[in-house]
Length: 206
Image (cartoon, rainbow, N blue to C red):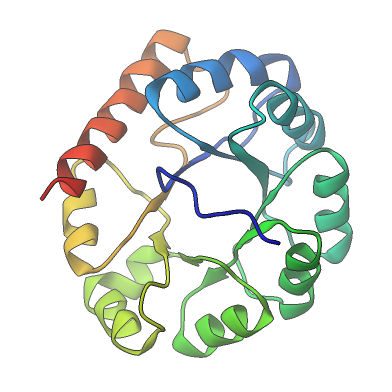
């Protein structure tokens, strides 16, 4: 059975996270309220960081980003990851992750890709790059997608622009360099994380 949707659908994208920093960074994000942690595979040490986070935060949805191949899926799963995030839509990759019980959030930028992803077993759709799709595009997506499909814009998301995306139909977000960059001071990370979470709670209460 696939994992359930994250209670707080804000995915922290931890590109370049050193394995040695994984638990400390994860602690800050977890305490702020993040329950979905993604470590992109296109930087060294990603699998080690995923393993450390998965072990420390068993009730969080931890996994890999930039997962492009079935081999990536199997490596992340072996490291304890239960989340697939990709920048693209490759049905074989999505299907394998779904078979392994992973939560699948592949990247899509067109309705054709969106439906192919859902047919392959996707649980949520990463709208990427979201600026290319735009608010009007996201509204059009939602007019044809199955009701209740989670759609998460990714790319340049800040606390200040979340409201516009939420109004256009976003149900969550992937948040990258505006939240975490390698070497960021933990106090600064905490401030950023709390700002995102506060904005999400405010928007969810509307």
